[in-house]
Length: 123
Image 1 (tube, rainbow, N blue to C red):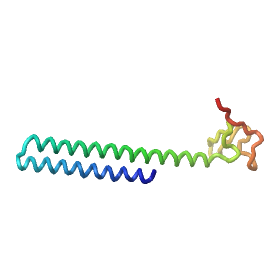
Image 2 (spheres, rainbow, N blue to C red):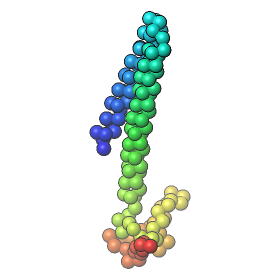
Image 3 (tube, rainbow, N blue to C red):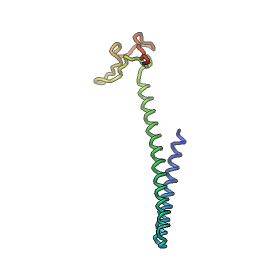
């Protein structure tokens, strides 16, 4: 996924190059007085380059967002004590700087197994 993310930056750079080429064609056409045919080519290049950039940058930022979501999810899962993972009684919010694990065991359980673990049932 990392390679695809940076491939999108390369494609965006190619889009910028196409945009510049279109601008050069347009300026050259104005200087030489070549008319509508040159303008059509220039505008086509410029629109194509802009579209290429927009699509590539959109994908790049989507990959960035997905990575951030995955990182946040992993951090939250690591914050859940091992005996509480998957338990419907887990609360995990802080009140006055003290984390309330659950109503049954406010400070958590000692050890790796909770005697009151209640798994979520599948609907």
